[in-house]
Image (cartoon, rainbow, N blue to C red; front, side, top):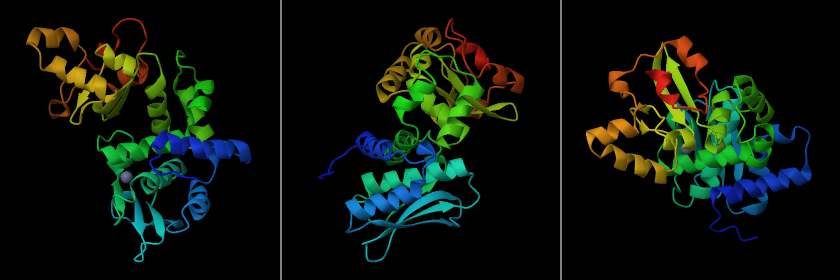
Length: 276
Ligand SMILES: [Zn+2]
């Protein structure tokens, strides 16, 4: 099989088809490290992944590291990660192996921010998307929560349990395909830490700007948003009413408010009310 040039979705679909056929017990809670080692031994006998281990990574969440000979690779994940985080980290590094190891022959270290699903760095974003597709196959996720559904945290939490990932990973996965206008707000001590909008919310101007810039839409939409921001102040106000201040001037968000408005109602421009 010539897998040269496969993209992240092709890879994830390949493994999902394989898992669907094998249909192991706990189909969606499979051992990612084992999958990485067994499949790369067959597909890439010249430089397979031979080790998946916990290590003290001094602040890094995970790493893909070559042996000196460059004929074997290891995946390391940082200490103290929950089982869900650990699976995502391993899947993320597996993504680096499949997609980026030729470009980065000395390996890749991934920070916490790289693996939390919101990074803008291209290779990290690709590794995260691969991990999302691998661990939370879209066809199955859409059966749990349809694109027009309005789930609460319990429903998304059930998906997190089903796929053994963190709640945040499941929320971000859902936000990427839902047709609803929804904004996820993560706050610390009543302040917005970061937020992520569905495409529908983003298109209608419902997003929260943090220090990383407006979050949660395809680059095409981001470009359009950037163009809107570059427009006249009036236009900016009218199109982006819901944009709050950057974290430099943090918007105050009462915890209670956030908890009750994590899911933005599809009608009206409720996104503006999340944080204002
Ligand atoms: Zn990474």
